[in-house]
Length: 325
Image 1 (tube, rainbow, N blue to C red):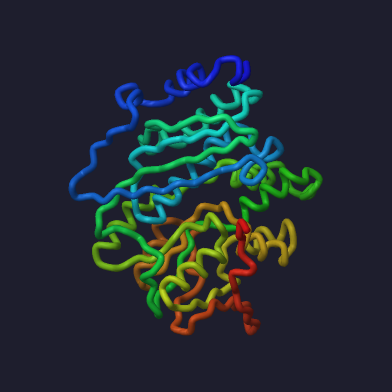
Image 2 (tube, rainbow, N blue to C red):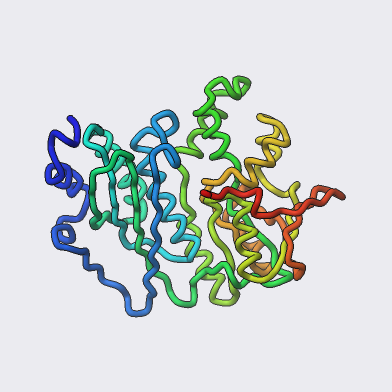
């Protein structure tokens, strides 16, 4: 069955089954918000051929990744999710089953956070495009910003980087990594197709923010980009110890040191958090998160980001990081 066979209303009827019946149906959704919380809104657009493809991403994964990108943005702000809306631009020849599987991927991830799809829009397009808007809430004292990093603080990553890019490369080039075990291949591919946003860490971050400021963002555009963005908006610099990055040695064993460094710094779509905070609090956070979390460097006054590898030093700049244009 194709979308053109059931039309807009037929498709809407199918997709409404993924939403709460008491919210869907009017011109807009109405959500209750605690008077002591602030509303957080974020939107991400995913385009066929740019963010996903039939080669790399089955429809269930397309839906999961679309939601993960938005939930990761909420986590990066210290916000818990309330609801999402979904905008779709689709061509009539697309399979209805493809769209339903995509929604199943969305709801599979949202169910873990008791977060509903509360509406959206559909239009005809030659290019499949998905636009997700996520609504969240946060206590004003628990907002995480990019602009508050201070010299003397350390930089923490909540997990490994480069795995998603490694998985993408395996999907695009099946002959790559033939020396890997099936378990290793599956781990890399899963990192790309089913990333996990860091919402589960929020309760620990909120507790810490009662006594300290935490600066940060997510690493959806790459670890290197996240550090540069934080430093630029905070008016500081950073020193990154490459030997402390948790996944470089592992990926180096599989694909070589140069490739590993490139994927870890610039690969993107790992959806981890990059946080700046006092060293004592940072060590406590690493203990809570587990072995994949690491302190990778420190914030300094000099307004440049330096990658340190023993006695070797190299400057990091935006020219190396991912940019759409």
